[in-house]
Image 1 (tube, rainbow, N blue to C red):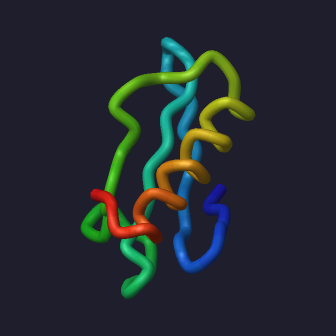
Image 2: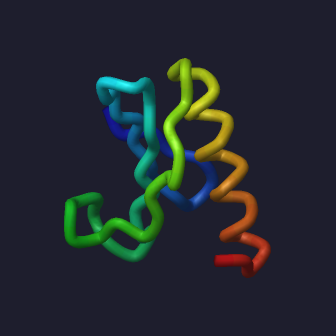
Image 3: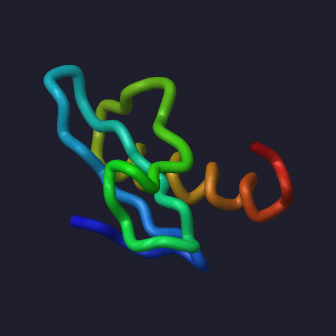
Length: 65
């Protein structure tokens, strides 16, 4: 399910090892072609992945890539 934080939309994905996130470009509708960032690690819980995605979005908003 796609979620929204600020101007960015993101998705949490369950994988064998745990959870990862994908952040989509806010200029376009979310699709595999509009992925801006993916988590570089996996997280044990969905909540941890959500907090990491929101933290990453905050960095993007502050100009960090």
